[in-house]
Length: 259
Image (tube, rainbow, N blue to C red):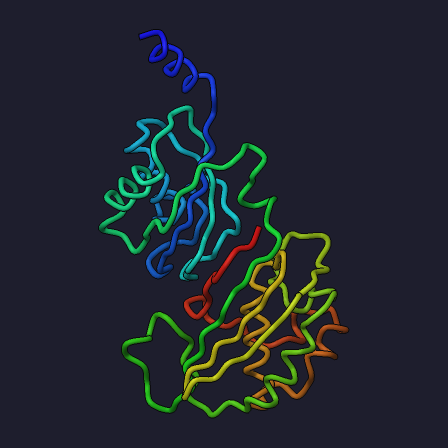
């Protein structure tokens, strides 16, 4: 009896930090972050699901906020509670309450209090998915950017390599970007082709708002000779107007987070 009482008070006084990994299809959601308006978001939907289990308001801290219609294969978030459940209970209950959504909880762990989903990140990887064929798409309509004109893969690979390293990415940041420091380091990039499917990957600790989508849009514009310039020069201009279009959100996936 005494042990039960001690355990009860231990749970009240000790905060438990949960780390969750979730996957979602971004179509139909107004991005990750909760909105003041009544609009469905990933954060609000997952917090409500967790709230049903914990019977208290849950606040999620996320590795990276995704925009409307952007997908995630491996999004990481954490939250605190003074209630301790088994990780399987949290995962299964969360998925039960998410069963009518395009969101699934893949994994749950209890972590130390010094872990932070955002500030502990060492590297994020994103993949952009293009479908390059003349005929319109059906199955992948909301999952990839359909480019009907033939893309020059060799030119795209060459231009892609200029993004690697430490640069001022002002030219590749949305005009609404409020970051004073637009310098970022891209660790690695890759471009893989499977028939008419193209996967462009970017690895870095952090990215600017719309940076990946603008980089991809610019690569496509250069490949199709819509933009008569090079990535190397556009980086030097430090002018958003010199870069290409912003690629559609639905082709972008948060692929992995490393800690």
